[in-house]
Length: 141
Image 1 (cartoon, rainbow, N blue to C red):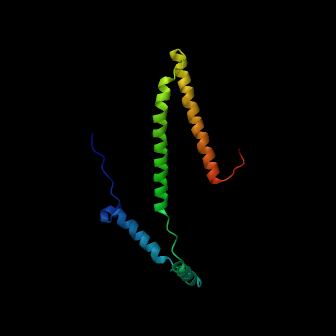
Image 2: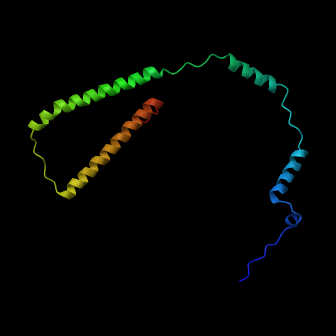
């Protein structure tokens, strides 16, 4: 089978690159456009805004030191509380003997799945209520 011959356009035969031809057309269009001149009050308005911004006081810096110390203090309190809960709860759990229910594997699997679904729904509800509280009242609940 013979390879297909490529038909060359007149521009290609003359040695003009298609990209150069497009640039020439763009240059022609831009040369015919009239020059844009801003309105009479535009420059004065812009300079007035620039001077207002330059005269404005600097923004108040965010108190990162206070925030980080608060986060560290909160993490330390929760960590200490978790350690104390485990320390005090382990002896009580060892002496406590509760009868465990005997469930078939099929029922145990469905109960476990229901527990995960309930946990996901609870987490969704809590996050929705928190976002409503942060954003403001919506009138739904």
